[in-house]
Amino acid sequence: MIPAWKLRRELVRVVKQIRSLPRRAIEPALRWNHDRTRWTRIRVEGNGPPRTDKICVLLVYQPSGVPASILTTCSYLSDKGYSVLLVANGGLRPQDRAVVAPLVWRLMERPNFGYDFGGYRDAIHHLMRDGQSPRFLILMNDSIWFPMHTGQPVIERLEASEFDVTGLFLHVPARNAVEKEMPRRPRRRKRAEHIESYVTIVPRHVFLSDPFVAFWQGYKQTSSKTLTIKRGEIGFSKALSAAGMTIGALSRRSLFLQAIVEKSDEFLEKSLRYAAYSDAEFSREGKELLESRNDPDWRQRALKHISTVVARRRFNASFCWATEQIFATSFVKKHPDMLFQLNRMRFLEAMDNGDLECNNAAAIDEMRARAERDRAAMNKDQPR
Image 1 (tube, rainbow, N blue to C red):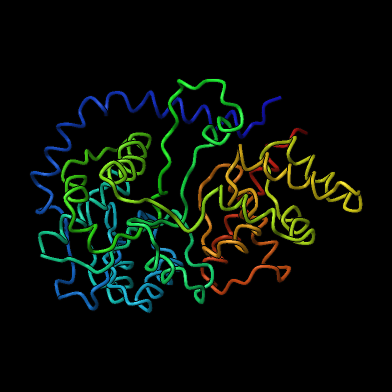
Image 2 (tube, rainbow, N blue to C red):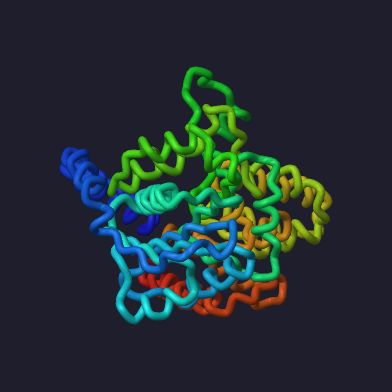
């Protein structure tokens, strides 16, 4: 029987695609009108020079109020030497504006058009019009809690990256990994590997490069989430990679699999203890492994299980504790899908047991509140 959450997710996806058809027909006109009028409708507060030669564009959409974790992120970035340009899609409530403005270099409020890449585009054009050429530019959005521990040198590691463009997480579609093991359809085109757009760092030589400028000049912003991912998140990595630039991230599936085989049995056991499974068969296998810890072939079975899971599901969501130990990227996704709901619960469990160190109190409180709502929804979906 298909779980209710999967049916609900697919139904929502189909409805959104149907609803997007009329919008896609008129969006060329909407884009033209936005570009024609945007600088009269975009409000920018704070026009002084950057406090430093590093800038972070932090994109938020918070119509119900800016959560405390966003304020923590702004302070963290400032402490790391970044002048924060906070871009608010749809604007801010007056009371939120009064709290946020003192914490950032500039506050840009814009129409809610184009998701995060629409906001990134307007912010980058604003910086270019203003003659800015930051030593580092970070593009960040509020789809994650970050950082979970302010003492982790994540920003420093991004700045020191060997890649031209670097993110926290390089998305390698599961089908790509499966095809490497089962190359039965050599003609089938692989889905694009790309940096997930919630944190991306761009050094000055990339910011000033023709491919970077051309991408943002030609980017067709859209209020279709699917097209934003295709044109923006995937398109950005593809465009710069095609121009000969190197694209990478602090974490990716292949590095996780390389690292996990070197870990101790105790590490593997704890990885399974805090594993999140949205598939019943994986959940059953994980439980059986934890109950058969003393079997002579346990290690081989545990490694095979982990490899199978991450070939089909995100390693950072399925094995959050192990991911944080290996990569220390210090972020948690806010995504509503079941796997991420379970991931957040396991993350909190590991933290409460003293196995994960976190000091972002605001993010922890918000995650707990989200987990309680998720549990209530899961219990409601359980058959009676």
